[in-house]
Length: 223
Ligand code: GAR
Image (tube, rainbow, N blue to C red):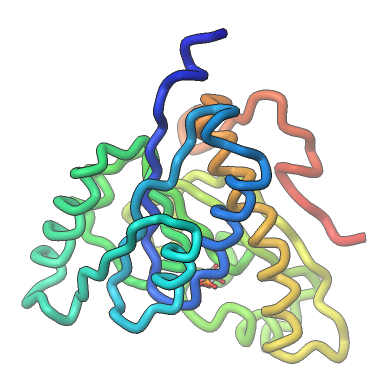
């Protein structure tokens, strides 16, 4: 068996709320038996919010979960330092922002360069920031979606790994649109996590190259 099959590939997930993307990762990891297949294991979930529902999601899958509440720290730097310390205890190969709603300092981003992955509910670079679904409806775009990308210094910026698009329908509300995008997020994020930890993803400048990915996996398009 190739050596990589025995290598442990720890992943730490950061969350702030509901945790449905975390759940998608854990469910897919279980269904595809990631640990046996390629050594991938989500070893810790950290939340910056005590009330995050995702903490219970983690525990339901047997993954230890802690809160490091940003509100307990006087500055962004102090919070990020505590977060980094908690992350580094697990020596992760990848840190996944699975619905993590804090802006991170450039020092934190630099520390996890090329190891920090984010999912954002828009087709970046359109609609960085908050309220993406409402803004997409207001802008009248016909296509919307989600993006998985490595994290750079810029808000919701960084090299794009893959995207999923959904049609904006004439009678869409913020809620119906959000729901359809979320359904795509749950397919997109686990797929990207697996690709990266299988060693199929490399950066070529600002562009991401994924070995052996189908075009419809790199960009899931609406029918
Ligand atoms: C998801 O839609 C995710 O894309 C978004 O927050 C939601 C979290 O939901 N992330 C961002 O907006 C990051 N800029 P979840 O907690 O159910 O996964």
